[in-house]
Length: 374
Ligand code: F6P
Image (cartoon, rainbow, N blue to C red; front, side, top):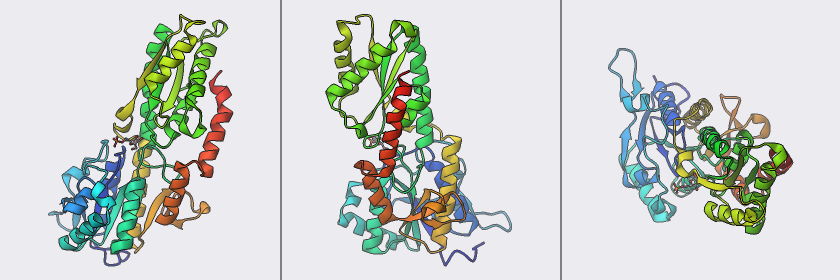
């Protein structure tokens, strides 16, 4: 049954783009359910913007045969909410970065007919693309932030962050088990090419002895000293510690193995008995079933995004931010909508370290450094 708030929206498209994040499927499921309940048909584009450019999509809703009801999700959508990755596939579409690719995407949307708006689930690149498509070709969209790196402006969290943190903490707990058995130190590298958030947050939860992240601006020599110092201090005889754990963000360009080799060389003469190992968690961090928190956040983002599109909004991203901090209020008191231009500006500031949010994160980590080292 079409509600009075749908402003003639009959069909929407959903896509997941950029690095996948646990909870993307939950958002697809929730958005489809919310749309179906309002009589809005949903199609899913495959492999992000690539599918929009090439016109590769499939129906996510179907007409119910049971009496009295209209649309319902396909079986695939109905069952996908608890699994990681993306049932639609994801990609970083190089073609879509170019105006020609976007023109082709707009032509595809016209040719398949009747797509009244897009729900774009992704990170910085995906949302930048959506904004360009809207500006150049008038395509309506609402963005949902999804990035395990938590590097999107105007939102305190993104789909995938909580699951990734849980995965890192669990991996660190496992590494700590074997580290303690052998009285070893480990440097564990976690994802986060441009943002050290995962490293910072996980280091507290995992009880690490130190955290190394790009935002600190340390030189390679300083990083080596920091690791060597943490290992020597951690294993000091009077402390009785059996493991030392240092978390390193991927954004630090020095490879984990080189850092460990250099720190090992540094302590060799004075502490020949101490052993440091390297583990790179890599893509392990991005997989897995979404946590409760990610499922909840993804579902509430999806509700606000579909309702926003149905109410005529466009060119905005839903965010986990109370209305007190600005943004457009939604039906959900924890979710607001922000103009994409503002989101992109804030995201840039997050990535280049100018954002107050990053500065506060780094200040907090400095305050915590002494505590971690205890
Ligand atoms: O999703 C963000 C991110 O996880 C970064 O932290 C990481 O560097 C990057 O994606 C890796 O992406 P890809 O799988 O394309 O190499």
